[in-house]
Amino acid sequence: MNKISKEIKVIAFDADDTLWINETYFRDAEHEFAKLLAKYETENKIDRELFRVEIKNLKNYGYGIKGFVLSMIECALEISNHQVHQKTIEEILNIGKDMLNKPIELLDGIEEVLRSLQGKYKLIVATKGDLLDQERKLENSNLLQYFHHVEVMSDKKESDYLKLLNHLDIKPSELLMIGNSLKSDVLPLVQIGASAIHVPFHTTWVHEEVTVDLSSKVKYCTISNIKEVLALF
Amino acid sequence: MNKISKEIKVIAFDADDTLWINETYFRDAEHEFAKLLAKYETENKIDRELFRVEIKNLKNYGYGIKGFVLSMIECALEISNHQVHQKTIEEILNIGKDMLNKPIELLDGIEEVLRSLQGKYKLIVATKGDLLDQERKLENSNLLQYFHHVEVMSDKKESDYLKLLNHLDIKPSELLMIGNSLKSDVLPLVQIGASAIHVPFHTTWVHEEVTVDLSSKVKYCTISNIKEVLALF
Image (cartoon, rainbow over all chains, first blue to last red; front, side, top):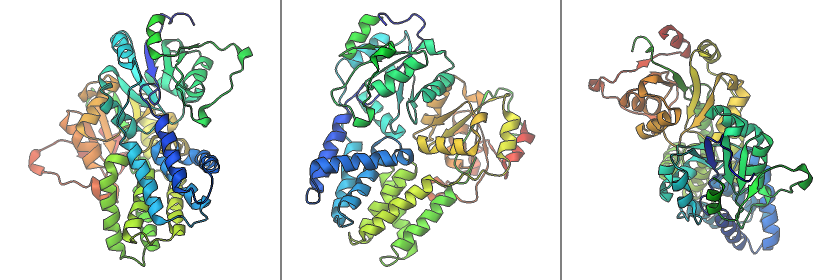
């Protein structure tokens, strides 16, 4: 993809780590969590156990901070063999509340890009986070004015994007997705015949990491800063 | 409202306690929770404390099972003065997982109504629950085929319905909402000039209870079984 197709009608932006910083807060929370449980295990082991519990719970809890907090509590009970102090459980709840109230830090260039695209395309946010949390961030970010609406998706697989197309009443060739996750924001789009631009963020959750088979020649473009999007139009 | 307006294009259905049983499961969970903490307080006092914690956390957690579980844990720590056994915390987590995996029990007549309206109107689900949870229920309910898509709303106030209208690109007079909550599914709709049908469920969460000022003469209709909807078309 050298230039954006003339067919594009809707541009969907991923939210976390595309519009604003997010993953960094999860890394910080994991670090705090490991400190709370330091007398039971090494940080490395705690990290791995938490990840295992999160993945196990993904089908129940989905993505987002609340499920993350529930998994931290479950993990703390397991790692401590039910010895973890009740005040520590309270501190874990507070890690979650702090995360939910973090200020919004926009990624460089986002507002310039949105301002430039607004009016020419229908701009939407397509995220698999928690709706309340994403709406709160959008309001605090002052970016709400640029978007037609927020699409919260329960997952970001091909079938979820097909549902999104149906919902938007557009063809695959009319959708462009911009996001930081190759696995969630780029590859499924390319597979269904839509367009995608990859803007990597410096930190990626292990679950979002993916190995791309270069021989498959899927077509998308990777840029290092969101502002480079504008040169593609 | 005696007959449905000819202008209606979209019919939005509330999900929990309109399509399927839900509130009953919360009442059951509250009862189980009170049993777990029976040595600290009476069930009545525990119920009230849990409600207080839930309302306090609503702006952080929003609606849904995950926030409910986090509030139960917080409440258990408070009521027990941090003495609650760690295994009890685990049992609270399990109450939540059980809730998330409850089978779907459709309310009487729902499928007949959806089958009759399908094709004549765009049918959507408009819910303020958790997206993953609502999608799971919709898939397990076999009702997915009737709906164009699911709208998850962070709240159901007038401003949220105005956003929904904007998103659907329709006028207020083109929307009909059907639901069990006067406060969330009926009154805000009537206020913005849309239509609403109230189908009460036998149990309503205290937070959803509302006193209607009869002198205000807001117009909506109340039916006792969803099947009565069909007579209005």
